[in-house]
Image 1 (cartoon, rainbow, N blue to C red):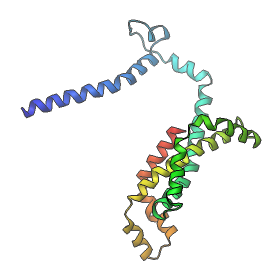
Image 2: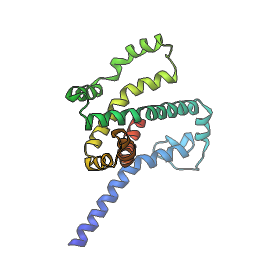
Image 3: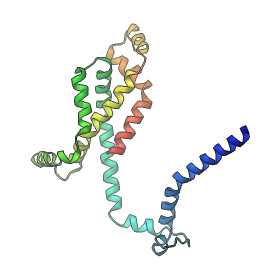
Image 4: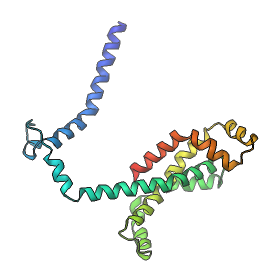
Length: 200
């Protein structure tokens, strides 16, 4: 009976895995088939080709991809240190009390389309309209509170004893944060950075 249950469990897991992998495999199949066969009904298989990737790279895709990569990377590089400091201050020192926490959380409830016109007017007056710098600032306004909120929860669960030990050894609170808290918080920082990158 135990062997039967384990076998059924494995079959179920394999079924779920295939169900989740099927869209990825279908996308890969469509990318590697010639255009005539990729969308044929009923589905057909034929010789594989890399011609679709060559056509993609000839168009504006490369420039658009590079712009997206640049903007998302800059948002994370600029936002993560600020979010770490804000999240730590809210978690440890109750910076701003419940009011600041509410404001940080409330920024996530604002539909981005509501801010499109004010952002446009502001960026036009600063001569940033249509620039990557303006896009970085716009995404930073949305991503920074999210990353700070995420890291605040992480820092709340960080053991205070480690910081206190650093303070007893003569470190300042700032040094304890840099030398003890941040290195041990790399998983949380990585998670916040990945989320910020994906949002951007």
